[in-house]
Image 1 (cartoon, one colour):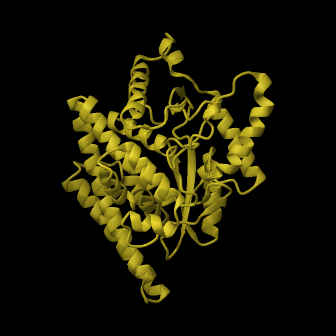
Image 2 (cartoon, rainbow, N blue to C red):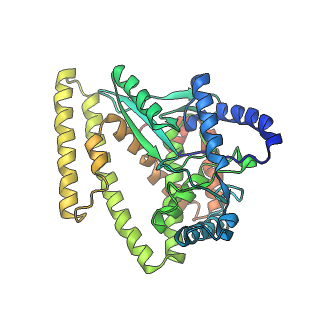
Image 3 (spheres, rainbow, N blue to C red):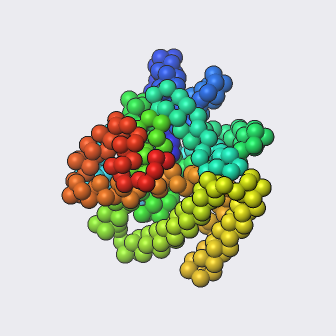
Length: 368
């Protein structure tokens, strides 16, 4: 799950709205993770500040000061939003009908962490949403401080910017999740995927199962994004997306391959010092493979350089969380003859089922 949003209308409503928001964020804390009153206050303040900047898209379109490139992207986003409802059967509500300029490159900064010789992400647990493998901050310095604290405890930690996050549709009455400057200028195929992904989190949510939730949303964004481009994208947009997506899939295949190798290593009978030595070798090989891909297939594309430079157990665990069950969801969609309504009904049923049943239904070899 990447995100969150809301809109305050009128000073007379602010006391009641803030209290309800506090309760909502206490339940939805999985989007960032509030383990203390101080953290919860930070989350509430950050979310309220974000939503106060959101204005309805028609206002931006009717404002003569809105730059023409932004005007075109906002108009495109609304066509995608309508498509999400009419063709993908995603929720028809206030989400992505407003836009906010945040003046920063990320909506929040997430912290993820994993032990030195494990790939399982550290989790933070909350009411309603269960346990999730990340903790988010509206202030990067706070996120970096949390990561340093985790490293001092022996974890490998990573801080990364998140372009959007979801309130699961539970704060729609406050304005829903808005479009943001952090992703509005994505290539057309990626913008469509972002909107479809975030709306998918409003369809089904399994408390405490990040892999299930993110893999489901990733499957919907793939299916929906490809359909959008096929039916509405220009030849240039389709070509741009094909090149982008080919690199992404090759990146994911490479990372998941080495994740499997590292997982086998960590489960082996080698002593800790042996595991550390082999781990260093595998990460060095992973970086070499990345350089080969850049040189031989990506025309020098450097978009993943920072990821490989910082790659550790936490970053590998994060990639798996978004992709591990995607093939199972795609098979499930095909089994429902491509009927989104039936597909979502089955996903909601699985979200309520025991974790082991979810994994069996999606063809997973093991409960992740």
